[in-house]
Length: 366
Image 1 (tube, one colour):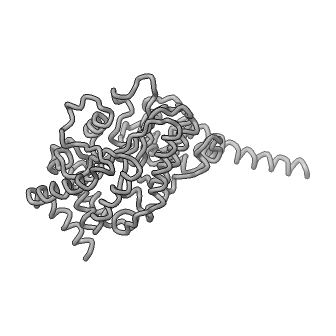
Image 2: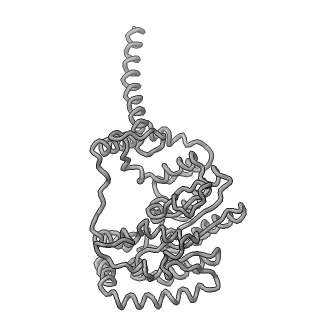
Image 3: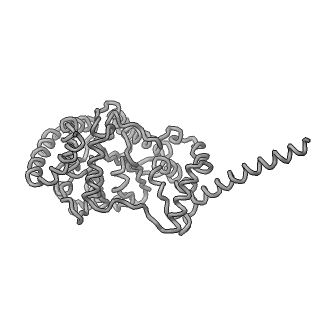
């Protein structure tokens, strides 16, 4: 009787063990989240469509591995548009883009602390600020986890990425995309992209529809600045150059005065390069030939290079004179007034783009 049960238990063990091992081997080989540093093999795992969706995970791991001395912090606007290989960065210091989608200031602060924990000799921090990141209703994303930040090894991520069913699905997506050489598709027509993103910001409770300025998020930002000063880390802060229609969405949401007050609060903490407003870059016409904007929220890498040129004093002759103003407590009010004047000029000259925002807002309100 014992022998029969022993054989039965062995069969059960084998039937469970081999699928588990096979899953682990497949997930490590494909490495859909770029967690294990598996070598890239064309037609096998060279396309990883799910990696960007879990950037908070993959980037936390990368920081552990490469220990950069320069980090670029912010939301997807930084992630999409700023190059860590910009020639203005000192070649002796490794730079890394630590931006990720839909980050609030608490998450950004924690990733800064994570970078510092793994590189105590951090030299430079560049932060791209976004108004929505200071929204009290903008919560941490599902892929954010305190357990993977800091110096302890993230064992839970190791198990999840090697043995979980979600990782298996991601591996299949990566494998199929790599075999067929299929990159993730995006909406191509600019006007459609603008409508999609404007609707999202105007209609989302955790973006502009339910915006509540958070003093706590301001403290998170101040913590980064204070820590950099304490550790002699060069800190450069800028406000992202979203498209002019995006500022009209802020206004249509009844948040213009809050937007201005946010800037006042920021410059009380540190000077900031302001690329927002109505300048020669942000007022690009919406058409099929756009080179500065992907949508109303995200600017192109070409604009990202101009931002870095300005804030790093690199080939500034290539940067439009009206793009990027260093703002502090002394000039904030005159700066805000100039933006108001520029806004009135733009609204008068671009009624179609102004009406685009108004129509979207009116449709959402009905």
